[in-house]
Length: 266
View 1 (cartoon, one colour):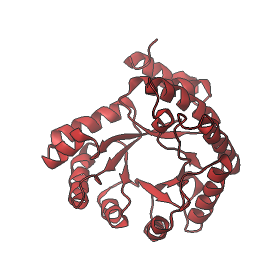
View 2: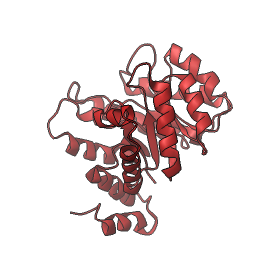
View 3: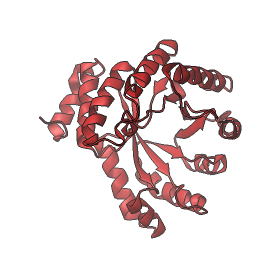
View 4: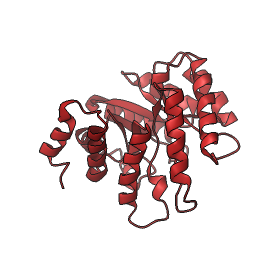
């Protein structure tokens, strides 16, 4: 089944940052509960927007969220020191967001990841910048998987992010990433594919319909996870319906639950 990483607890969002500054636990708790009720499988926690305050903000967020979390957390920071601190605060193996092939990031993240019981989001980014072709994405995915396996990470703990790019700037960007995902899943059937989907619609009107359509195409190609807003009931309905049609929903149970809850409706 498709896994949803709830993206809402991020201090780059104005309301979340205000709640963190004011230490408004009720706001954070309410948002996390809503994400979980909507079907989030992980809650992403990012406290990086307030420069100089990330450590104490992350500590406060984790202390606030842990008692009411019914799903695993995704610890989101480019700073291994923050991640080390956060990793020590959680009870269940978390997801880590993220590593890439950019030398500075890679060289600091690998020692942190070695020996950790966690899942890892691995971005197909290197020092040359964003991938320019399907072959670029696949080559970077191969290197990430190989090097993560070398420190003991199992393939089913690796979540490759192929880096979706705007189709408004190049009409081939959609097929580029779809083709790459198919190849990655053929090479590494146990590796997961995740990432933010909304970049595909950047610069275009009526973005949500593009995002909803694109996620179903990506699921058919092999994507089995995404970093999205689970309170967007229409994209959640599209995901559950695609899981049904792709044969991932035994006895249609998840789909029927979505219909009964009112999340899925015509």
